[in-house]
Amino acid sequence: MAFSLLVSRYLGRPTPETRVQFGYSAPAHADRLCEVLEGEVVFDAPYTAILVPRALAHQPNIAFDHQVWQTASEMCAAEQRGQQASDPLGDFALAFEHLLAARARPPRLGEVAEHLGISQRTLIRRLQANGWTFARYREARLQPRLEQLLADPSLTLEEVASRLGFSDSSAFARSFKRRFGQTPGQFRKALDVP
Image (cartoon, rainbow, N blue to C red; front, side, top):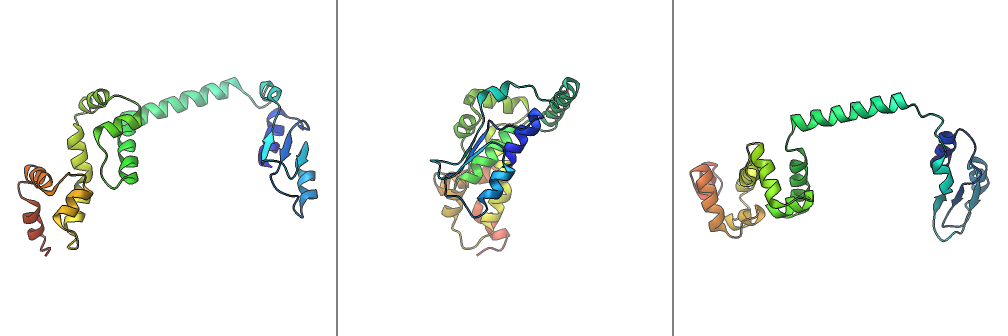
């Protein structure tokens, strides 16, 4: 309903050539719908849709102001540049978070690159240009989760390793010791986790 009215306002005139069709029988308030909606209103159609003739898309918008459009475009471009400058890893970070939330394990380099539609090598270069490696970013991003999982006494070290995307607990232990200077078991013991 709002779309039909929007088309009318966009053109600055009624649009009786539009057709609003509903994929269900006429409701009790069908008469009111026919009053409010401009153009033809049809019930029991094969699908629900608002059909607008293609020719209406080529009609000028009465509210169009080139100066306003140009100013708005420049403001959007400036805001985008500002966001990129303040968060150079923005697209990468969003893709990493999206994939992390969608999987039971952290994403791999190839998965993030594929999600961004770029090659792994291009992603590596982008990260390096901003002082990161994929492994270092992944570790930094997963550290809070790692600490949370290790603090949970109901999880074995094998389960923690699996949830963090390691193929086995020994690979997890080696990586953990290299980063933190102690084994996951020693870390747990320091937390007084049974």
